Image (cartoon, rainbow, N blue to C red; front, side):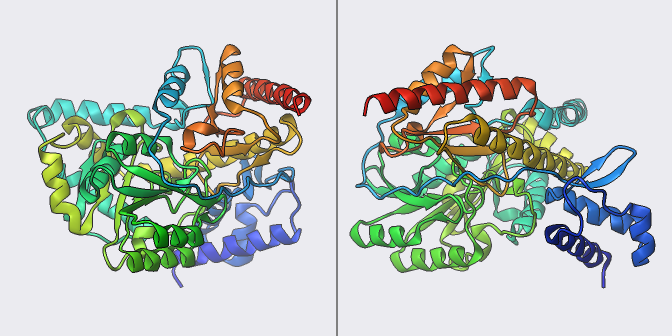
Length: 479
């Protein structure tokens, strides 16, 4: 038995003991030395096991004290309801979305609205070092054009990282892009023509709606479950009625619901796509932020017939400003490279080289482990605070990773009005109407929890909760 399997077995046994109540919340688990002696294994193996349990959120380390079972009150709020299918339509939200984005970036505004991780969760110092090294020692190449498919050492590092998502590829199959949205728009341009119909999850990422608008595409929104993702039954009904050219979806940590599709449903989706000849564009931008790694693979991992174009980026893990994404386009790669060559050429040379150097130095996995743990801790704190501070009957999503929450308010609360009132208090939120071309989510909001949970965040969330309660009362009086 390898040491990897051994530490996983130790972690699994202790996790079972915690769930059975052998060790209670707040109680100290055996020390590393004691566990090492009991099981006759090395200290390093026990530390690996405890690190795994920390990643699962089951234990917490206390400096100079040991490891303790994480003590968290029960989250009892219901998850949001599933949407309904409405007829395809053109996108009509551009002006509202642009207004929300501009206001969320205003100086002095507390940013619950933008899905951007706090600066404390970005490895800025390491990136500074790599940028300095590249510009100093490789300046002729760093300041020259770089063409599609991108910097080969970076493509090699991405290919290595894709193994964690269950996708085995050669570096030559990777195309570096100017972020994930660039990958999405090139995928849509290759797969569709103006007037075509695409399917999307409902609610969906507002950027996708705007891409569809720019490309003259119609969108049919397919209801998604907050836990298991897009409704395959609804997708099949829609495919029976309309000719769908492409489906844009997220199998791991969708935005804004945070849903993750189980493996069997992923395989069912691929069979459905094959039956109706629907090409799938997989947006996996949050995939590396799954709290329990190696538990859920990307949809692309099960794609045997070439129906999936995979898109992702480092925007949520390294920095949104480096603008480095990638795609695995399969049979469409030649078209993608031709399109990229005669439009953007490729992503910025300097940042491609700096990110490649950072990934080669093996610090990325340590960084991911740190931010997963921080996001998990903060998300839990936000969920419990919403449960306590928001109106009774509020529904809260349960994502298995990442840092965004989808919240459904009770009654007839208009969250666009909540957005306006919160801005007056210096707080931005993302109202639900920007995540759909329908009116189904006007009572919902998306919260960015990629922020340290501190008194400032608590006060801001308390203010939003208070405003929501006032709107609930106002809505009740109008019935």
